[in-house]
Length: 332
Image (cartoon, rainbow, N blue to C red):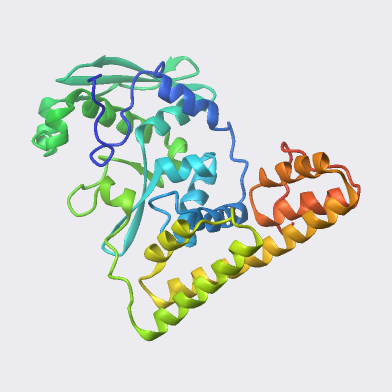
């Protein structure tokens, strides 16, 4: 491994041997089976888009699509939005998975494994195992094969030949021997598709955005969003900072539809926060401050606004508290 890892815009996190600490750490975070529902993915997509923390979450629908694919692969939503990307080209979308997560998914599957046999700047060979036995010929990539594929002259291949050769070998073997790991082939790995128009760099940031709208209708919606934010800041100054709100405006300011969606999300957030603060006020009338802090802290650890409200309602009704191990999907 070189001292400097390949830049993420050029190649996904390099896939290394099974003992790679990065892959082992991800494997611990990935459950053995999918546990999330698509409705939960939609709910998470809304939160992710509003958080402005994920570069590819330009809107709730885009974030929900990535989260839903993560659910299909058995990947927790936050990891999915960091390690699975949407590549858009010619009106089509392709899901691309980063290498470290691919290795982690293989490691997490019972009965299958891979072993790096050779990895140099000139060749890479990986053995694939099922039930401890070799499942077929090893996958090999070398300079001559990369040259025939038109890859060897590319800049990232010149800088990181070791990682790129190993990466292609693992990707090829996974698709050949363990297609279930990538949803039967529904997900691709960087390098498997034509990297002409469209690349992982584009997948990480999404397609170029048009200029922000500056017409009267757009300005009116922005003013409405600003007013909702001021009301939200009065109810709870910590819920959303002005910087986050303005960053979201910059991201969603390219169409009237996006701006109105943001306005609706802000209004929903304000309504939920008002109800939340009202329930906290009722709880303070009933319990001492220590109990209130414990309940509020437990509520804040929940995923959606509906789940937070459920925790406070349960506390006010003297019901058994909702534990952090439980999942209470909003609306179920």
